[in-house]
Amino acid sequence: MIIVGGSSSRDLAKEMASILDCTYIQAASTKFPDGECYTRIDTESLDDDVVIVQNTYPNDNLIEMFLLQDAVRRLGARSVTLVIPYFGYARQDRVFKPGEPESAKVMCRHLNMGCDRVITIDIHKEVVLDNFDCPHIDLKAAPVIADYFKDKKIDLVLSPDIGAAGRAKEVGERMGVPYDHLEKTRLSGTDVRIAPAEMDCTGKRVLIVDDMISTGGTIIAAASALREAGAVSVSVACTHGVFVNNAIERLTGSALDTVLCCNTLENEVSHISVASIIAEAVRKG
Image (tube, rainbow, N blue to C red; front, top):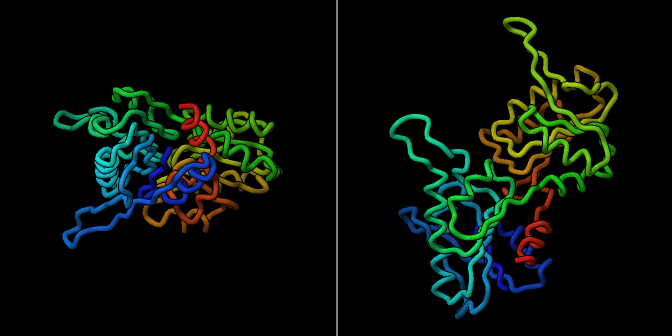
């Protein structure tokens, strides 16, 4: 087996190769003067099963993935597995207004042309993967998040809303601590109360878990409300740290004690690795 790392996922790909004890090749990626993507795999042949590790977000990384698929096929790959830590366009999974594309389906169809298997992590909706003709699996990051915080003296695990309550349950049960979801209650025309639906957070060290943080506004408001309600500390961990518009700076400057994400998107707070769960899925085949 050979692991090929794209430009978006170098560290994750290297760690996977180390766990699997297999060959690692870093694709060389750059841009032409006009902004078009150039990528090359510096080897004479890939006469083996190949795993490409590369995000499809933002758009430049998506184009790089298409080009890497073509390159490994031309080099003789026996099979091609795509590991897509963060699947771009997955949230655009349906048409709301006439004239809109079903973007998630479009991306799957194009990626499908050059692969034999697809692995994602906490994709927005698993049903999106049914647009692939090849075998596919979506892995859950909750176990590695739970293991990371198991010795951090967390007393309560919360999800931002009831829709993500299953994630809090999975993390809480693995850590052996209570779990709940946050609930918004409108007190007046201008005042909204944010608090755990059932649990009391007074004097507790709280961990908020989510699949993705983009702007961070909801999490910042929740952390402030939990502090006011008596929480001793509030930390947050998500799978995908998208962090747009200086979100990391605003999150770290808020009532939060710890801000962490998985290394599906590599940044300064992506200290929770999903390499082990991906490696296990790759090994199982």
